[in-house]
Length: 113
Length: 114
Image (cartoon, rainbow over all chains, first blue to last red; front, side):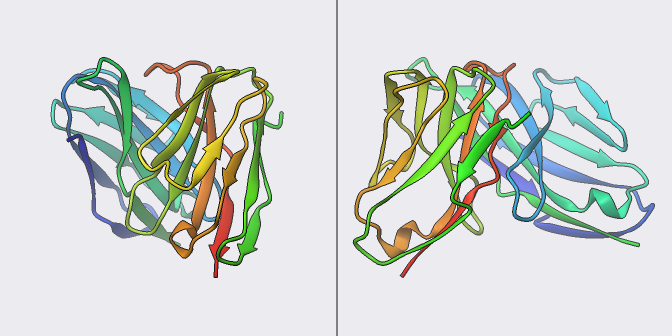
């Protein structure tokens, strides 16, 4: 069964203190790994898609990387507005020939001014 | 640019009542889906549709019905509400069912069943 595990569950950082969020996955036939940001009371908002090991993508203070077993979301010099829950999701081929999207439970990030 | 619109934002039902959660998208997306989000669990797929007239079950379909008569609309019906259906429900759409087509989510409906 496909599994997506995010760690830590919650992370509190001082403004400007860089860190990384982890998404480890166990799937066969990876088609893509997605990162989403979710603000309280809102739906998830798409950030990145990564397709193969070694790939990296950046957006402002965020950089996502991918290996064969995990993805990291690096946050450099974060600001309070980066506070949110970050969700990871993996799309993979199933034994039935279709594709399935599996979400992790998220990391709740709080940036303290 | 509305994107994915869900109504209502909040709803309280009594056990056994039925209701319909509305979802509409204005991006001409083929794929639409319903998820529920519960504390400590990842988003779980309830039902999905790959085009008008085509629907299929996801991971947790019991107690829910869907239909897709137009490209734009994808309502979710709760047939006889149960406390276990207390959750936040998200509708999401994408251009196609491929990894290079990320989901666009609505802002959710928070449902409480008493």
